[in-house]
Every structure is written in structure tokens, then in C-alpha cells.
Image 1: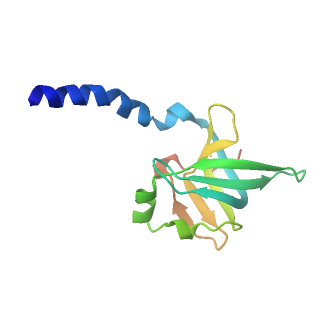
Image 2: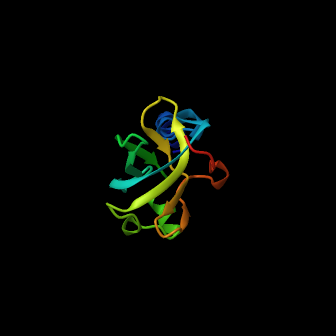
Image 3: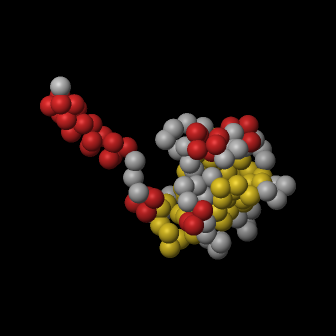
Length: 132
């Protein structure tokens, strides 16, 4: 019985290691972003939710950005539900840019149009205060 359990653990360990990664493996903590845009899509699923914003630059060009945030269960415990984030609302999200240079970033803090802030990332200490 013990040998079977140990074998199963050894077989599943690589999958568990690959399933989750360190924050710094995907996001560059030297490249903070703080972007404001219109919520266009919300993927409320494990292992992390994704929030998509249409962000307009100074010339009026719109680019869609994706922000990875905490898992749904963690956000729900913080009082943020799927219904808290509404398509069409304006949000400001602070985080760190993806290392691959794509228009993806971590989502650490979200500021709602009414001025409320909410922690949506893994660690409040990672909240950048600078803009991209």
C-alpha cells in the first residue's frame, strides 16, 4: 500500500510542478504596468482568472491587454465575485508585464471607477505604483 502511494506521488509530482509556476517565471518585476481601460472579457476559471481590458494610448489606438489574477476561490474569499467585474466598466489595473513582451500582465490591484481598490493578485507587496 505504501509503495503504491509513493509511486502515485512520484508520478503526479512533475504534473503538479508544471501546473503552477513562480510569479517571476512569467512576469518581470522590473517592468510595472498601471493601465486603465474598458473591461471587455472575464475568464472566471482556475487556476487564475483573466481580465481583459481595451486600453487606449495617447494617439487613440486601442490595444487589448490580458491580466492574470488570483484563483476564483481566493477572490471570492476577498469579497470579489464574478459579478463584481462587469463588462463595459472602466478599471485601472496595476501589475507587472509578461516576460514574453506580449500585452499580458499580472493583475495585482484593481481600481474601480468609484475609487475602490481591491487586491486581485497573489501578493500585495508586488503592487507596482509606477505606470508603464
